[in-house]
Length: 241
Figure: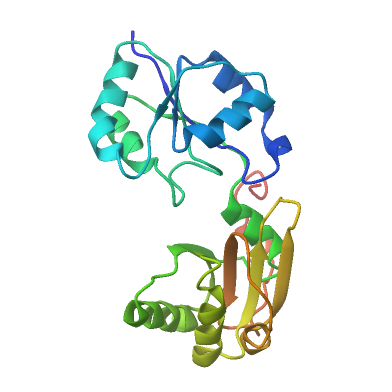
């Protein structure tokens, strides 16, 4: 009888953000496939979990995905974790999910914290419609086109950026859409958590040293406000949560 593939969300900073279900899943599985075994080892120690781990990251996932699925088909329960957050959201996860589905296996998602959902809630931007556009491109031409598309898209966009490039990125956003409403979420859930909100030009003018991990939220149409749906438009049974 085949085992299961579990995609387990893990904390993005504060280790207390583990769910009861995530802890139980990691305790009961046979193997943990971890993006960063050293970081996952700290999490397992915090919750007194003793399980065998194998590395599964962006540089070996193509080579190891068939092996992982073979172990599951042999009956092992495998938990996949990224170094932080939810697998497959800018982290390994898509390949094993696709391979599992092709093998007739239904992955089990154990939801939890995500830098994206944290930022959506904390940004203070309109999020009746929003998108996650992953990491900001590094090359200048692609980067400019990236933000030009955001400027005209009509909804709020969230993306990840490096501390080494965020100052220049804010300058570019201000150049393309100076009046855009922007939120910079730094070190979410960690000791030095900080959320900066303002117009793009205002944030670009800040003189400071940028450190940590960043999510940027951008609303190129800052005058747009969320309007509640009429009751008749809500799904039967009330709004979804």
